[in-house]
Length: 67
Image (tube, rainbow, N blue to C red):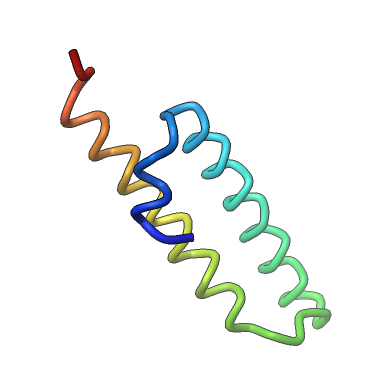
């Protein structure tokens, strides 16, 4: 997901997206450990997506509520 798309979401939606991405990353790591993961590049993509979401959440926290 692109950062511009993430900035259009609310904080609650972003936090839900972060939980989903974190769970996806956990599952991918588990699949890798058990030898079931074919495409290991998915782990890198999930980590980057999680970082993007967390960055946008932090930006919103810093900017504060908009009047």
